[in-house]
Length: 392
Image (spheres, rainbow, N blue to C red):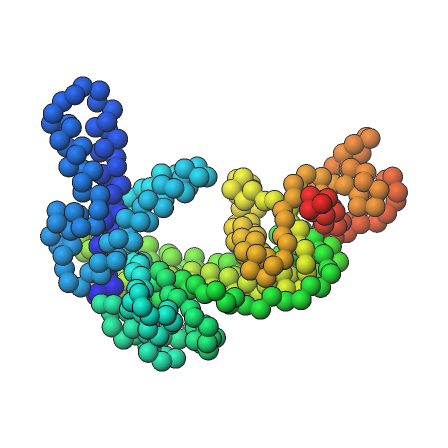
């Protein structure tokens, strides 16, 4: 219950910041020096702090609400604006709607005279199986923290995020900082590789190796569709009987089942992507991949499900941050003609009276140098060549 209270408080403060900003924008469009409008602007500008907001809304003074939850909600609002100004893709901050997911953030604080370790802050590990969190108290945990606890180096806990997902699982994640690296940098291998991402196989490398596409969503699609039909019927029945969905037990049981199926697909896909990306980065000094615009590709209704299921964008993001973590180099290149060009002589299909290759053409022979190509292997070799040129 404490997690839900803090989650609701965090969502309310964020939404209040959005509402204040929208009202301020409308009021400032009025050019007339009306005293009432000026006073209202001053009131709204004064309310944009955790302390003033708590004074204005008394329920935020509840002792079960972590004070740092309020500060983090306001900070996240400002971060959203900064992200919009920087890249202009995510859009301006919008209202957070109520959902079955609970989430809030707090921070670990240290006394100034003390060194920062995982065991002496306001959020700290009591032992290998228990962690202390303000307001929540002693929590039993399991996960990947054992390796970090074994470190003797000074390690500071920063932002702590507590989440309950739609399937009813609870997670606690921490931002850690240390002057000592968390991973040992692997030795240079002297190897370079290009990868071609496709839906037939998950990827094909310039060495000719392929990684099969696991198609996690397609495997579970039938079970998920059946579970969603049952969920729809139970929702319809509850509405006909004028029962709220949040208190309808049969609906909530089925909703949890559907959420667990979605979580199963997500976890399996993420684990697969982590394994493949880590293997590529650790075993090669340089990795080149093609730039993908998944949003545009999803407009192709024939391939939309396969593209969404494969997780290309997530995979490229993993390669990018792991390359930085392990001191490797990772680049994306323009995919233009990587599939149509011959790696041996550079001839481009679709020129000199030839026809372009289609998705059905998995193997082809260059009409100029007569080299035989496997489509995806040839594309991966072209991507590596472009990556080396771009790197130079």
